[in-house]
Image 1: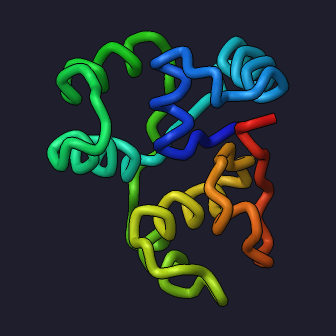
Image 2 (image 1 turned 120 degrees about the vertical axis):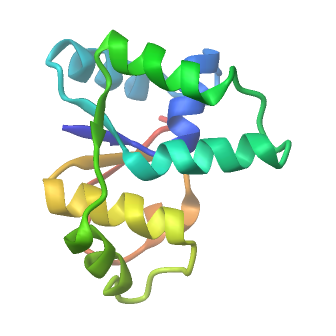
Length: 132
């Protein structure tokens, strides 16, 4: 399973060239296997970024429905995810990143991200640089 970080989902939807060729191939293959996912926190983060004018997205509720209908999986947040997110040793304080990382860890997923803080974190997390 590949879990997309919020910015990676946005890049993918925009067709951004910031998303690397290797990452695109991995996303395509994972999508065909029906194991491409996002954390429920991604929708909250995307809506917050849009409301603050930091990204331009279609109306988030419609965007959400379209992507879910296309076959993207959503991993819900639960109590265990919340607790694990607090226990991430040496991880930065961004709550959305903490939830997304904890989601990937608990599901045994590879997190696809370009976030330098996540890529450089020393914790046990399978991760893939979305820029490659």
